[in-house]
Structure formats: C-alpha cells, structure tokens
Length: 83
Image (cartoon, rainbow, N blue to C red; front, side):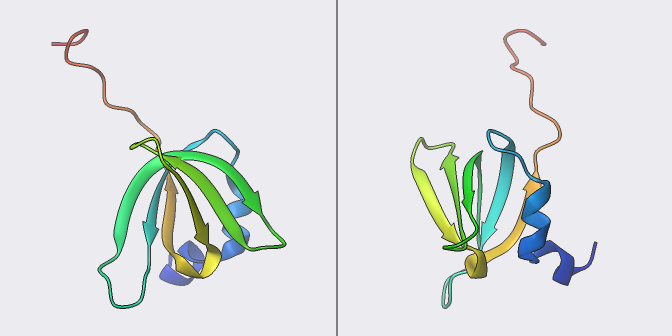
C-alpha cells in the first residue's frame, strides 16, 4: 500500500468502532509517535478520530495528524496460558 493511501482519510471508512488499531501520529517538530488502542469514534464533520490508548487515556487525533493507521490483526498470547 502506498504512503498516500495510508494517510487518506477515506481509508478510515473501513474501520469499525471497538476495533483494535495502531495509530502513528505526525506532530510538527516531534518524532512520529506510535500507539496501540481501541477505536471509539470517528467524527467526520470535525475530522477527528477518538481512540482509547493502551494506557487507558482517550485520545482525539485530527485527520491531518495521522501518519498511518493499521488494524491489529493478531494478539500476543499470555505466557501464563501458552508457555
């Protein structure tokens, strides 16, 4: 997938609420920050994506600040149950 397709806001239409995602944010003057979380909502009129990060904090990200967003396809299994 090209870089242009990854940052295209229309790509967000394929994501569902409560879906596990990885978001890479682009903030001027700062290294891109990658964070995992759960998608809460997408506000198309305000052009905002809201997700709950693994830290438990809710984050609102403007579409322009999204460098890349990917679904999390697989989850790590706990070593307690799968040695």
